[in-house]
Length: 467
Ligand code: F0G
Image 1 (cartoon, rainbow, N blue to C red):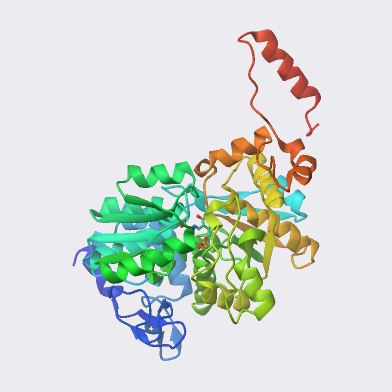
Image 2: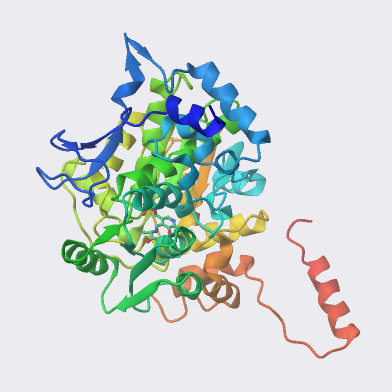
């Protein structure tokens, strides 16, 4: 038997199922719809095949066996092993043919310590798992490798998504690698050039609709009813399976000692749902013995989850009209809200919201630690500061922020920040001037002579805030 055949026999299809999160009906694998045929709610992948005779194992392996196998694969050149997603394939839904996985070697993202951000937030041990270091610059790649592989297995020629930019960039890349066509619906004028240019470069058919993200989602729902295209938004349950691996990698990186808190940004709420699902499954499989608390942070102007939790106890979605400069999370009606509520409650996490100025300051602080991220990712640090002040996170606790997008996704925001233009003419102008000016480093235009540069250097040295 070849290695691949041996692997396929262990990782049988049928171990997992698609199940509706509301009515529990079992969905049909490979079907076009990503929603429940009975009640229309979202589907999720569950693994009834893990339990036999009261023992929970994946692919016949106990926790120690899984840990050892995954670690061994780090020295392999097999494409599946090189992927930080498929390296963990024992706890992902199985494909019929493992040779047909579409991978850009996603995952394997770094974990960095953030010393000065830790001081700013008031915690001693602060780390960031930087999902912006994925092939297309965002966490979406870990989900897309899974969903695109299942799309190709299902024989789809077209895949589609509505997006605030990162999903579309990622989907376009993976579709191109798979030889599939891709259709992108984005809100006109509300996504960054970096993200738009990626979708174009990877060959997507790109439509800028005269609406917001929520409007794009509504139009796409109708398009997929009428045309043979497969939806790759995070309502697609296979996306979330791939995105689970960020949490698995993180725990492996810390030798399976769970942090006390994981803090993630919330938009459509697929990512936090995926991370939470991974935590619960790792506990079920005995890979960890304790659950980190998963907290989700939103922008004040796009705070549907925060309102939903505070005003209805997580029972009914309160949609909002979204307004924030963090365009990635400018979403008013998050599709995966029920899944997110479930995992936040199960892990004992919190939800919080942050202002535009708080987010901008946090982004500059993450940059100043030599890491950088896009604005939506920075809500995590801004939110953490609040959770520390409230006493929810304690000073000596071990905290990990999930940074979701690369700094270069939105250079416009960063340039405006440093030039001092970000809040010009807005209601936040005064507050911004007070809080942000010490962090601003506007580029200087000088005559081309060394004297001018030396003067700048001397002044910078005299006024160095770190001295
Ligand atoms: N951070 C970044 C950089 C994002 O692009 C997104 C979502 C989020 C956080 C929020 O993640 O939606 O899973 O809660 N971007 C989507 C997109 C909506 O279309 O690219 P979420």
